[in-house]
Structures are given as structure tokens and as C-alpha cells.
Image 1 (cartoon, rainbow, N blue to C red):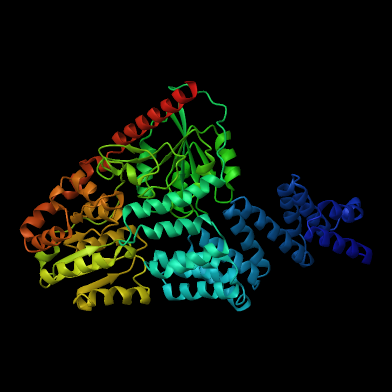
Image 2: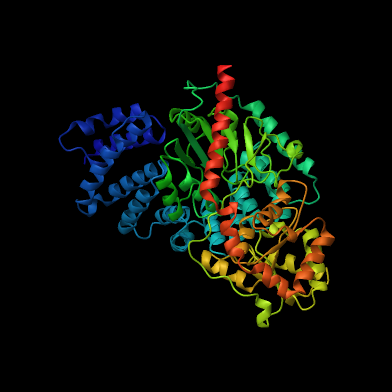
Length: 631
């Protein structure tokens, strides 16, 4: 290559870096005109096509990489650059498997490259392969100590590997390295909230809103933490939700109705919008419904909101008539995709939970929009046709707390898929000589002062009993100490409160219920999945019935399995009921016997019946929409 050729390449490269595709192409012209264009020139021309929005890039890259791989050692630098370009394109198009493959090829050529190790570690973390991700990130660490993005990725990996102290330290390093960036602040806030340290997360969410005013994820984080605060009244929490969404709906103008066939009886296209088409508690409620739906009268789109995938995601994708990976799509683009797909009903399964797209719902991409499952309270949005609930969770009179119309899908608004495999239920543990054990496997954020005081009263009155608490964050020394200190302040010594970490394998998690005699439902934020798991393992629970949806799930579940006698109207009755059962093992053993079969025979596990009720609700809402347009 001549000196003039190198000058032209450098000029073209500078133009590419500056985003000037046409200029780059002019510099490359003489190099590409010859019979054997230099590989560097061909690669830069593909970059120019990217800047100009032209096609043929993937094909050109594949051909160039194949040619360079067949070449000698002198082609390695260009080959590495071409592979990096392929990785970037694959990641932009959610082609993570292809990107991982190309990164492996690049690391074979340059095994000590910290940039490649960091990229591969981040991608592996996104696919929940955390142990592998850690290996690559730690190989990159000596060269990335001043990189905030590196520490954010490393913190996420440590968080999911169950090393909370290291995760918190990594997130704080990322914040210190880039104090004006909102992403590390949100990662630390979400980590603390997920660990049950809501008081520590609050100021960080406020900081995130200072850095990015109105940031939806930070606002949703603030609203989500308010659900756990027993010091706030239900009306106050509902008011907080309404205030934010009023601002959102003022800022976002709804789209006009798309052209539609407003035939009230035609087959319907339904889109489910969720971040939980993966290994997540909500997946156990979504999958049975999808499997039982009538495909002759409905077509289903599944819109995956989370940036990560796992083996469960593949199962959901196979259940979809159309699958959309939406994490990289902005709201306008996703709204257009939904309209192009002819969506009649859009069912949001996220609410204010992580990776939600409530601003998309404000755009109204579908003529009927419903809220279901993923968030146990009002969204605050008024541009929804309804929130799907039932008469036990939201009895008549609950309308004052909801911005959406309440659509009651009686007898219950949930359908749960039990584990396919796992341990058998055990006899009552205390009959085998073990101390009587109360248990709660709920999120530690639900352990507010009133819950700790009530459970401590139970432990004091049930002599010799102990409490087993299991959940994410129990390995966090700060949280662990706070929990034990809270019970100590109520006169409960540490040896009577046992904390167990979360289990990655579902069967291992369920095995721990075999040590529990009686479960205790927290309040005002009741359990749902954890309560169903307890019932599956034939461990009944005591519930305190509250006045709004958050605090009525326990009583709804007990009613469905025929155990309304375990519902307490007030804290004093809750204590008395738990203590009485601890003192009457014969009665408790009788309540436990056959509980799994009672659950299976209940509406909570009747997927076919639930699907027919849900489809009838869809049809009713569609007919209302048609009547409104035709009237």
C-alpha cells in the first residue's frame, strides 16, 4: 500500500468518525476503483453505507470476514475491526447469539483485549450467564478501573451471583467515576430496593430525577416504593400515581384511531406487553393462559420488554403468533409496529414494574388497552379501558382508588401454573420434634415495622417457636443486620430468626417450605406467588384482610382454596389465629392435608376456564369499542 493510499484511508476514517458518509465515500473512491481494493477500504465503505442508511452491509461484512479469515496474519487487525462492526450491528438488532459468536472469534485472535472481554461479559450477563460473564469482566478489570460502564456491568453480575457487598461497591464506583450520569444511580437504587433497603433507595431515586427530570423508570421506582410504605394511606398512594400520569398524559398526545374493521364479532389480534417473558414469577401466570387461549378466534403478539433472554423466553416465543423484541425500540417505533400488526387489544402486564412502557400506553397504539397482572395497584393512567381484577381483591367501592375502570374477572383474576417437578409436601414438621416454625418467603421490603411487631408478638406467645425468613438480599450484611436488630428491639433474640438466601433452582426453593409449619402473610403488601408456593407445598398461611388491592391478595387466595377461616379482620385476630394454630398441631395437620389437591381443583389452576373468561372480557371490550365508533 502506497503512502497516498494510507492518506486516503486516514481521510476516509476521519470522515466516518465525524459521521460524514458521502465525504468518506469520495476519499475511498480511488481505492475501491482498482481490481483489488484494500480490505480496510472495503470495511470503511461498509461504515459509509451505515451512515447513509444503505443496505447490503451484513452481506458485505460476511464476505469480508470470510476472506480475511482465509488470509494470513497480516489481515488480523482488519479482521478484528470487521468483527467488532459485526458485533455492534448484531447487538443493535438484538442478535445477541451472533454477537457472542463473533466476540469469541475476535478473542481467539486477540485473547488479551480488555474491550472484547468487557463486551462479551456484558452480553453474557444479559443472557443470565453470570458466572461466565464474571470471568470475562475480571479479565478486563485491570484495564477498566476508570470505566463507569465496566463497574455497572460488574455490579449487575455480582448482584445476580449473590454477592451484595461487592455489587454495591461496584455500583458506587460507577457513580463516583461518572457522577453526572443517571444510569449508575438507577442501578444502585434498583439494587437497594430489590434487596429490601427502600429507605436507602429513596434518595437515589430523587437524585436520578434531578439528573433526568421526569425519567419514567425513576418515577415508577418512587411509586413502586410507595406501595411498601405503611405510613401512606391508600388514597395518598393513589394520588401519587395520578399526579405523575397526569403530567405524562399532558405531555404525550394520543394517536388517532387507525383504520380498522369495526366488526364486533370478527377474530381479534391481541398483544401482551411484558418484561417477564423469562424466568420470573409472573411467567407462571402468563404461560397457562397463553396455552389455553382459543387460537381460532384470536391471534397473539408477545412484546418482550426486557433486554435479557433465557430458556423460558424461548418457550414464550414459541407460543406467540408474532414475537417483538422491544427493548431497543422507542415508543413511537413500537407504536407503529403494533399498528402495522393490526393490534385490536393491548394488554399491559407491567404497570410500574421494571422495564415498563407506560408512556407507550399514553400514545394509545391500540383501540382497547387493558392492565393486568404485573402491578397490584392503579397505574394512574386514564387512557386505559380497564384494569383486570376481581371482586375479592377490589370489592365494590374500590373505584375511588383506581384511575382505570375496574373489570372484575370473577371468581379470581389469576391463574397459576404449578411447578412441573419438585419436592413432595411434607408432614407437619413440628410433629417430628422440630421447633414450631413460622415462615415467610416474601420480599424483605414487606417487613415494615408493623409486620415485625406483629410477628414478634406471635413469637413471644408461641413459646419455643422460631421464624424462617427467605428472600433476595439475605446475604446483604447491612439488610441482614437491620432485620435482626428490628426483631431484637421487640425482644426476640437472634437465634429465633433464621434468614435464608434466595435459591436459583425452583426445586431447591420449594424444598425450604418443608421446614415450615405455618406461613405468615405480610401486610399491607401481601404475598402472591410465595403464598401459592406455600399452598402447593401444603403449608397454609394466616392473612390479614386489608382495605385495598395490595392487602387483599392473601384473603382472595385463601378463599379460593376453601380456607377463609385463616383470614383475620385485624392484627389482634391475626396474632390470636397464628398462636392458636401453633398450639393445636392436630388441627393444623388437618388443614394441611390435601391442600395441594385443593389448589389444583380451585379456579386458581383452571387454565381453560380462566382463558374462556378472559376471552369473554376481551370480546365485551371490543364490542364496546365498536359500538363507540359506529354510534
